Length: 254
Length: 102
Image (cartoon, rainbow over all chains, first blue to last red; front, side, top):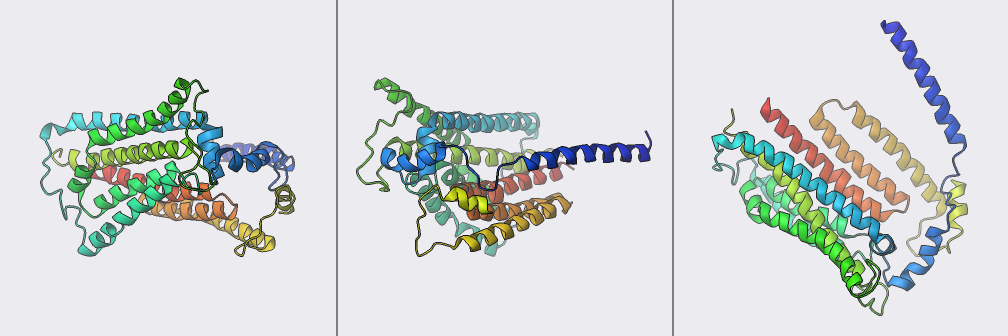
């Protein structure tokens, strides 16, 4: 097929695609149009039913909690999968037994300014991550966002050029276990409800008396906490494996 | 844009001292949509992978602002953490790994 023929074939395909696309656009509902009653119903009853003013969290961890269990395990398994693949690669190449020496302070040739600027943010990152993860019931945050921010604190330690410190703070076995506790904790909250004779993931804890209080909303806060530590562990695990691949495995290799 | 106002009228409007007038909100939404389109184009046109990862981070920030303008603060937080930080970081690490092999 010549270049000219290819171009005509492309243009014809483009024209057909554009036609269908524009046709589809004409049938779209108006901007901001929301036909279903579900959202309006939730908006009206969620705070009264759960005492959670973070209604998104109430939906994620209560009304659609079963969906979120599935999502959490998707993340868990994805992280395990990445770690497994990377570890296999490492085994293939560490025969040269890459030394750990020189991977401490300054190995990434970070200047003092960079180290200071990154290490200064470690504390705030832990604080913000913890805040986000523990305030799902009162704000639009939640365990997912909080977990990623928490993990960022560990990554900041690495960015400061302290890979060995990063490893010491996040040994793989510990990170694995924390991740498993997070994923399992979520499922266990559901099973506890079953053990109490309630449907799976029923909110069996006290809802508190004041909507919007941090201590309110029962299992929503608990589940958010478990999601937070699971997400943080998964992220630290993936970053740690990638770092190990980058920094250690190739050192003795070539 | 009028559709959004019509739909919003189903919900009782809550006015606070920090409320933004609907007309201004519509303008903000249009501006941020244009910026997002420009940002996406910028990412695609950046051909060097390391720079592209940084451009992607900036684009993630734009997307986060867009979600905020469309009243989805929870998605804003997710996009900030994942789109603007986590994804570019993983890309950079992968690039570092690939380059070392060469």
